[in-house]
Length: 255
Ligand SMILES: [Zn+2]
Image (tube, rainbow, N blue to C red; front, side, top):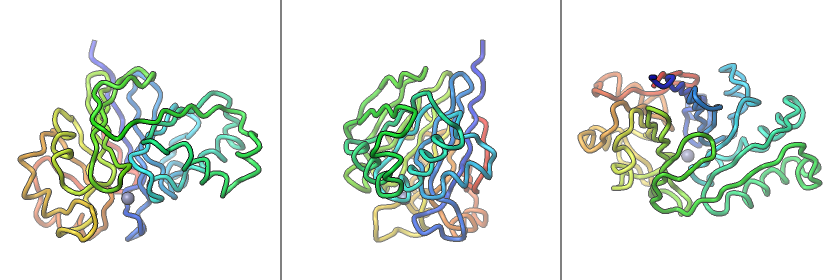
């Protein structure tokens, strides 16, 4: 029997500055065969989920690509929503690089000390910290395995390749163009690729120019660009590339 199609919603597609009003990084993945999960939860994650009419209460897990604020800053509000709106009681799983638990607890404490530090949450957070190295076939406990591949942006940066039943979805998080990125894209039905700017940037990010020049080295069947500004989207629309589209907040893809 054919597996159900995976639904991917690009909840927030902006950079760290929310340029052009785009939301912070957050991807909703609903494999169909198992409950949905998030990849990254930047500061506007909850707002984006509400706008897209995606119920955080359905989430089983959140994966973090690295520990920068534009990817983790929405976490305390997801906890708050779990505690007071969902009245969540079942555990929520958290996957991320080493240091994720300490960083997220610090963030939650800074925002709602009375909620977190006194163990007021009625639901358990189950953390799995992953070494930032290439690991294939990591068991998620959610009905699928995933691969991690270190990327070049921050010492905690890694991309995920989710091996969902019948479909493979890659998410880069932030990175510069590097061999790990090309490795991650291999075998993906969909690659969610950061593309922060049009030309090669000073900091460790991918540019549209690099995607254009290196497209033949990206093995993914489809590529959607995130972590971008309207500038990048317009440049792509002007000179399209096969297999590549620019994301908009709330865009839904069936994979
Ligand atoms: Zn970022």
